[in-house]
Image (cartoon, rainbow, N blue to C red; front, side, top):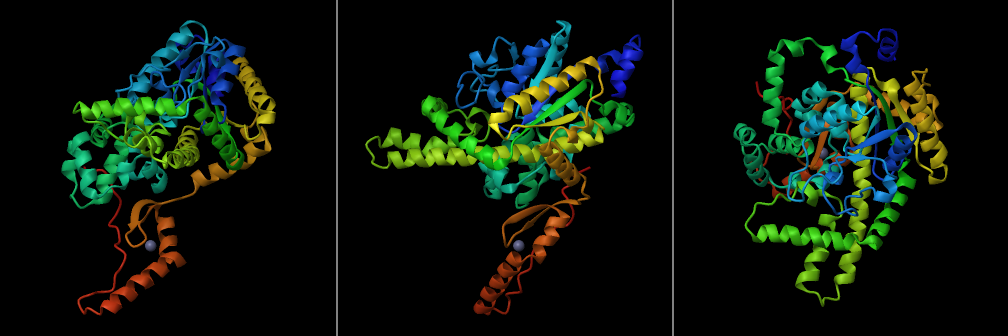
Length: 474
Ligand SMILES: [Zn+2]
């Protein structure tokens, strides 16, 4: 608001000019119609679209990556779509940030409106809150985790310590050096940073140190401000209807040739292994939902094509893909809540985030497209924008609850109950777990077993207390 006012009032101030370039950002979980909204806005306001979805950057494979079709693009120019080759790693946040910034400038140079859209919210966070991102990632426990979701996405994070350490030695030897080989949490944290951010933890720490030392970073809040005058849309849908919709979408993907595409990736993957290449199971195109889920079926199809089990395997693969998709949608919302909202709050940009309710497809035109167009129009005209919570009942409810949640004073930690095999990232959840019936039950069972063995050396088993957080080493 202030910046826009300054722009109109003091347009001769050259130093402010860059800051005031308009930028529309659309994010939200998969299956909410982000691409459609982007096209709608671009057609109304002479815009061009920049994709911020890591998987959609891969060339080809339109079904598995859920790419917008040429018809759906309705003649609107799209950038960073299908620009990464199959064998390449997904772009890091920095790569994305550099390329997207350049494209935004070029679009502005053509006098058009840049619209960023995508489900890889970490790309958007990286672009909008550049310094903050690094600050955040440096504290490894800040990387949001629902252990189950993360393990599903990156199966290696569920492997034993030695397997993870071997991988860490490959991808970030400097960090691997630092940890005790049995310190599974620290090893996992470093790997987690690598997989969730696409960057080495050692690199992030080094950067953080050099930033700390530079006076520029000490200049404080000003340097972390977003460079653009942003209007943001969070496309939201309540989980029950969304899950139903996602299930149907998977069925549709199967009907449209998902199996043929996964088979294509499978063959490519196998050929690379056969040629002796080191292939990462946890990175790149094979990370797209549907690939690993279909692997057992595809393997059986090759090895035992006559097997009567094939139909069953295929059905199980489809079910797993549905589960994976729903889990991914949940993960995306969690990221927005735990990371994006917190950053927006810090940057005092929460009043620029509008939640559009895409729960009901019947009302999508009014609730999403209509309201989105209306807000963008006001935004570009420099008119007063409404309060985000006043946009709809859902907006009020969700934004209020989520902002409150992101506000809650939580002491971050990373503690694992070795008995229950559960990891907790806040002290509050950890304490609650220790007092929970579930945990007590497990403790009692373990003690009973210990008594039965009646070995005098068998001390009562206690939960291993964690000695402080995994702060980056100095
Ligand atoms: Zn426990």
